[in-house]
Figure 1 (cartoon, rainbow, N blue to C red):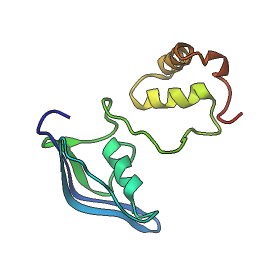
Figure 2 (cartoon, rainbow, N blue to C red; figure 1 turned 180 degrees about the vertical axis):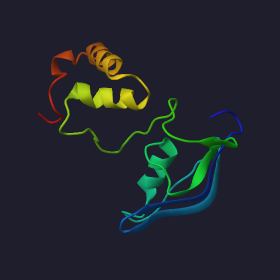
Figure 3 (cartoon, rainbow, N blue to C red; figure 1 turned 30 degrees about the vertical axis):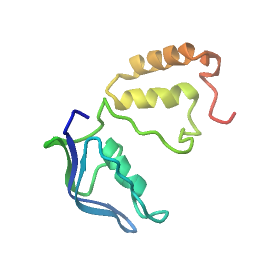
Figure 4 (spheres, rainbow, N blue to C red; figure 1 turned 90 degrees about the horizontal axis):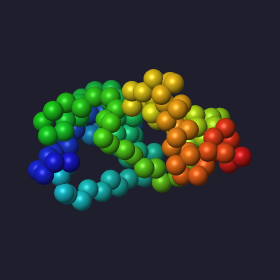
Length: 133
């Protein structure tokens, strides 16, 4: 974030079939601040982070960064999960390629880059293996 930038949630909520999962309303998070989300399991903490990272869209409201609307995936942001969140039905290369597709690469370039990245970290021989195999 640039110095002084603010991440703002405006009228934000996320609806699921079972009801509202997140109902934030208005919230500002200033650059350099230390922000903690507390709540019971299932209360919507991860959903809020997924919305902020562009992995999910809110049902109502919008997200602003330094006053500018944010929509979709943000190529300069990332979300790191506490647990392994790989797609178990996909190979290692496919798990990497899907992230690259979400960043706008076409399938051919995403597959080629996934292979390069696996080679860079010494895992090229595992490209076609599924997680946990």
